[in-house]
Structures are given as structure tokens and as C-alpha cells.
Image 1 (cartoon, rainbow, N blue to C red):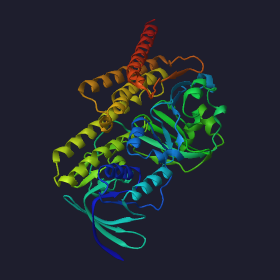
Image 2 (image 1 turned 135 degrees about the vertical axis):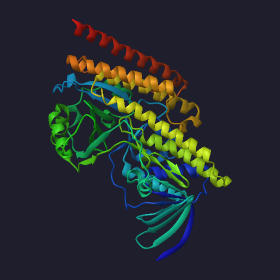
Image 3 (image 1 turned 120 degrees about the horizontal axis):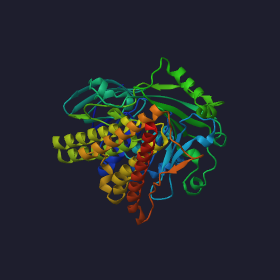
Image 4 (image 1 turned 60 degrees about the vertical axis):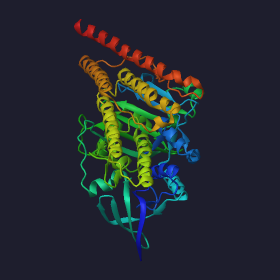
Length: 494
């Protein structure tokens, strides 16, 4: 069976979260925008695990889809655990903790399989057309005319549109089809992960009960994202439900190499006293290997084509910027696409400004992340880096976005002075870490050492004072690191 040519304002490749976010953003401005979504799968597969926090939570709120989050667990915060001596004693594990406190913004651990399905149902109810399961048999592009031949289970559909948005994720349909190149970037990381069932209960491997967390956080510690910070790599532990936990590591490919990723995965766990205890008797699922985690396309749009989310770029999951940047892209793309439909005019300058803004946003994130892998394992160095990041992120993005709703769509970008400051602090931390390695010393901490981020977003007017507090904490953490560096310098000379 063959359908005659059907015209749409927009055709979206892929039906995941990026496709739904762009649809919701467009429908909010122009409900009669005609959209077709092409999704190849009959149902979405389970993903590693993802979170709605801070800016992403504000974006979800702006799209009026908070009701979909009722079936997802409240994310209680973020934890970073350091064990520089690979000690078997939990007392020697230091922690940087950032519990999500009751206030203006709630965080969630997403069951992505469920959430993506919920979102897709929502946008179809709002008017989007969905072909699923569907395969693109043929695609051609001439400036501002995209033609598709699509095969479904019972028919062949021919359709065309002025614009196509590639939301196919790492499949990167458009980039591969049109041979678009990626930029050369300094961040080179890989990832290995698996889902585990029935890991060792926290009371047998975690620090003792944390009264501050239990009293103030919106959920128990086991529903935080837990990071295990190691030399040139870090591990995540994300509880997806009562039995299933996502566990994986991201590593610096410039410092870590191996012949077989499964052997490396098992050997690293076996040689890490903390991870071994957690996963000793757990049931493991399929091991997934991602050879290249970060990438950025040299271009994010062409005449009639736009890349969205992972189809255009992926940075690194260390501080989870993916959904945030994708949501901000959707805000820009929705305005550009709806304005073009209203006026019938393609404003090249507006599209160039959009691309320039997000390319610089990706460059800024890469600059932050690429240097951090050199001192991930150090409690005081990395926690000082995190405190600097908290000030930048909350002071420059989150809090301004609460006050000025239009600020929400603007991603973090560094100017020349700011880039210089980021490089300066990264250089200092790297030099201090190198000096410590030469002296064979580690961060000295008290037993069961916990440092709190002091990040909170209160409901009242008091939130305007939080950035100043975070700035002071960042400066004090840096000065503390420098004082320790002087002490080590003195020791090395005596």
C-alpha cells in the first residue's frame, strides 16, 4: 500500500525525549504546527539512567509536563566518594555530598524507558503524527525540501517537509547520511556499564547514617547519584528501582587503555575494595561499551536541517549536562521554526547566532570537563573544583533563570576572561596534584569525612543570597588547597 505525498511543517527523525521536547516547545507557541515523528522501535529500550535536576527541572516545569514525573523516584542528590588509599575501611572514604533539599526545585531519577513513552504519548495527544515502528527507506535533501519514503508494518508512506530535525541520538542519521564531520576536541573519554540486580545493601558498604541528609533531603541517600572517584576515571551508581542498579565507569582514554573491555571492567571491580564489596554477589546484565563518549558536530544546522541533542553533540555524563543543553536547544529551535512559519522568511543571521551560541556552549563545557580528569581522585582538589562549578552553575544560570524566565534558554558560555580563569584554576590543581604524586601523598581527611555543597534553592526570597554564599565557599576551598600546597612544598625542601 502506498500513501500519496503528505506535507508537514517539520519531520523529526527519532521519537525519544529530544523529539518530544521539541514538539512540546513548538506546540506551546503554535499548537497547529504540523509535525511527523518517525520512530524505528516498537518500544524504547531501557537506558543507563538519567536525571531531571536544576535547569532541566525548570525546563520541564515550563513545558507543563510535571504530572508525568509522578511515576519516577525523587532524586535525593549527588554524592562523590573518594578512596585514594583503596582502603577496606569505610572510615577512610571521604565524601562530598550535595543533598537535594526541600525548596523551589525538585529532582527526579528518570526511568527513561517509561518517561520517553509517556512523553511520546503526550505529544501525540497534542497533535503530532507518529509512525512507529517505521524505517526510512529513502531520504533526499535539497535546500529547504526534505523528502522521505518510510516503511511501516503495513504501508509505504511518502512525505516531505521544509525542515527536518534529527533527534535520532547516537544513531546520528543526518550526520552519517550527509557525511558531516565532527570537531577535534580535547576531551577523550570512553564508558563501560551494566545493570546489576540485588547489589549489596548500603548498610554493608556505605558510611554510617547521615543525619543531616536524612533530616533535610527530599529522599533517602540510595536515590542519589553516587560517584566513586578514582584516578583518571569515575564510576556511577544509580538506583533505578527496588532491585535494579545502573553501574558504570567513564575513563580518560589518554591515561587508561586495555585490550578487552569486559576483562578490564571485571578486573577493575575486583581490585577496588569498595566496588568489590558492593557488587560481590550481584546479578549482572549485559555489559555495554561506548568507545567514544564526547563528540561535537562541526555544524548544527543547514538549509532545512537541524541537529538536536545527541545527534549533534554529547559532552560527558560527569555532571549530566545532556538534557539541559538539549532542552535549551529546543527553546531556540521552537522560536526559529515557528517564526519562519509565521513570516515565511528564513533569517540566516538568526540561525547563525543559534549555532554560534551552542557551539560556544559546548566548547565551554569541554574546557571544564577535559581538565578535571587529571585530579578526579583527589578529595580536596576535586571538591574545590565542584564548589567552583556550583557557584558558576547556580550563580550564573539557575538562579537568574528563576528570576528571569527568558534566561532559561541561554546555555553557559565563557568569555575570554572567564576561559582564562577556568584554565588558571585547572592548571593550579594539575600542578598541585603532580607535586603530590611525586611526594606520594594523598588528601588527608578525618574519619568519615563529609563536606556538603551547601547548595539549596529555597522557595522564598532568600535564594538570591545563595550565589554569594557559594562564591565564598569556592574561594575558601581554593585557599585551603593552596595552603596545603605550601605545606607540601615546605616538606619537599626539608
